[in-house]
Image 1 (cartoon, rainbow, N blue to C red):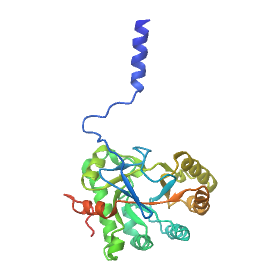
Image 2 (tube, one colour):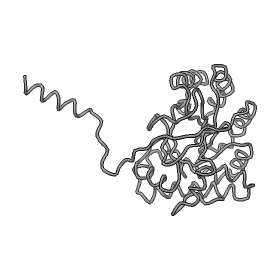
Image 3 (cartoon, rainbow, N blue to C red):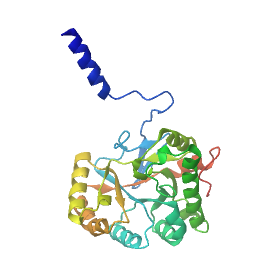
Image 4 (cartoon, one colour):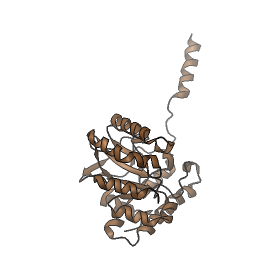
Length: 271
């Protein structure tokens, strides 16, 4: 019996969470200050309960974030839907699409939304790349965003946020630490719409409502490149509002942006 219990304990131990290797992870505590329709996220920062601790937003507040654009087909429609409801969001753009459609980036910030990096080419397995290649994905994406906004008014240039979302949420410890050391906040989410799976507008709406109800809000990932999401978006936002949810925009705020600009070996350089 004793040998059996030892063997059983060893078998269960295989499935227990492993402690991170020395230096592979850094403990982060989510801190935010809510003010005037914005939640100011602070460093060091890795936010989103899908992977980290919960993003500290007010109760039943939702921070809309849109990935994978800018989309020449759907971005303008998404902006119109948001404008009609007075909602401000944050767009995590892919650098190569930013370079192809810089006018969309300028329109997004002109309408009061924030923009940030979702890498240069959206490699889902970025964390397995060589370290130099990981860094290049970040720097190239920010270079494209800064080029798109170089001639914009100062208040619009300031909407380029020191934030990064890993493609596919495939976060790696090395790049996450590298980003934080340069004042760049890593943003995951509390939930996604699953719109990237090709679901119908009705399914996207049902999945998102359930996710936001169970999480009582949080950072929400949508994809502006998915026509079913764009179809679902007006009714989804209206139903969330009817259920008592409010919408808040995430930002690093002026102090966080200044911290990134002044960081050694900075990624964000556009003042």
